[in-house]
Amino acid sequence: MKLLNQYKNVQFLGLYNGQMSLWYPDRLEVGEFSIPTEKGDDYVIWSKTNKFLSRKRNSVEMVFQKDGFEKWPQGRFGDVNKINDCVYTYKYEGGIYSLSFFCDGEENLVNIESDRPLSVYNIGVSSLHDVLILSRTPMFNCKSLLFYSKTGKLLWKFFGEDDCLKINGFCLPIVDNVVVIISQKIVATKKIQGFDIHTGEKLWEVNVECGYPNTFFAGEDKMLYGCMSTWNKGYVSSKIQMCKLNPFTGAVEISVLKEDEKYEVYPWQVSMYGRRLYYADNRSGCEIGVIDIDKKELLDCTPLKLKRGYTIDAPVVTDDKVYQFIREMRELRVYENVPI
Image 1 (cartoon, rainbow, N blue to C red):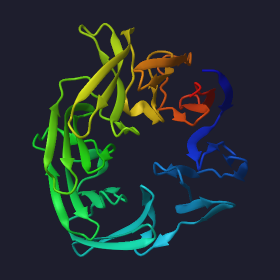
Image 2: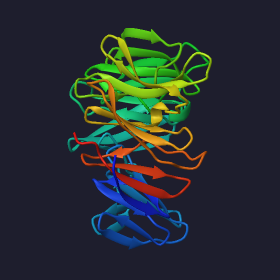
Image 3: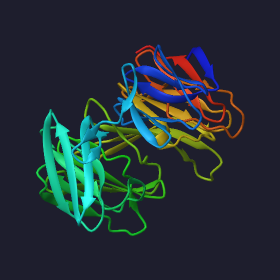
């Protein structure tokens, strides 16, 4: 891929409504908009929709609007949160977890008895799965999931049978009426299961020895795709492989794309755009690669030629550009995307 531009001494926040958001020591740039920053500021782009840019200054949080930062929006129970384009607020008081959320402009109010505050993992907005997915534990330490209707009726519970395994709360793919739950040991996938999201009926189960990612992306064909590197026998070299998972049957297809070197591609350092996967390889020097999931082949791999020990995150992708941030260097590189 051709290098188009480099931005140095900067923190790349991501794309806010499709606009590049750069945090310099003295200013924040969002597209063509620029605003001065102050020492101690903290800026974050929230939610996968990239439509929630916040600033924390002197313990006061504000949200970016068209002309600058404004007071954080308020709802029934205080500060507004956002997930899957749904706005929600919550409170925990007297053993009752109360959740107010808006979907399609209509407020839904749920009150749930609980001995502790709950974590919101998903608010379904599709007519096929108007389901709340909550948990009694934080996303990074998830052991169980609670599935409620949007009226507050408990539909079913999921509890892992193996105490050594935790749920990957950062990746809960939902395709039609199927929710896929990935159980892992630290970050190594050990079990993948598919359930009816309304009834909890187990549809299939895959027990994993090695080589399956813990992060999947849903394609337009309703299949799930992921990518990672795995060691070959003897741990002398590794290979980069793509995993295709059928969420309705549990059928898995593995395609090896590149091998015989010491690759370091982790499944959470992969992004999906259209019918492609974009990966960050953190072996010495680092590279970014592009995979065509239909052809099951590597379209491009671009070396970054970095110092040993530098790491990179998942690429951020648009139709014509690939954005790659290098944290240790505080540098953003913008590449021309491989023509689609």
